[in-house]
Image (tube, rainbow, N blue to C red; front, side, top):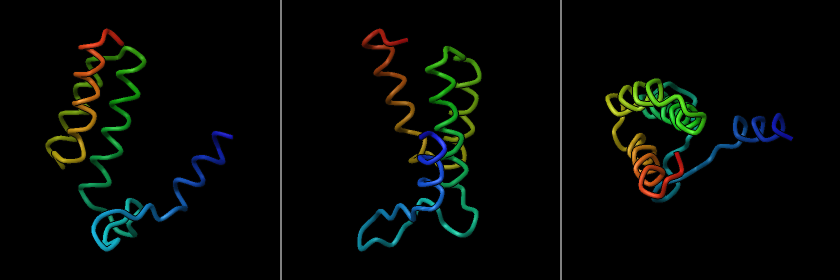
Length: 85
């Protein structure tokens, strides 16, 4: 099931934005793609308790594209606030 989910994410255009002008899986490399990947990896590292590497990944993601990394930052603050760490 996990493999099928990953295949779906890779192959699905995942359109967003007004008038569907943006895609997550764009056919070219942008800072948004890299920042999203780093942010998701940082979130996974945070959940597993690897806070130092999570902070590094978030920082690099923020430097590349702050809007893509802000969601992970909010999730980290919420986890800390509600004792989920």
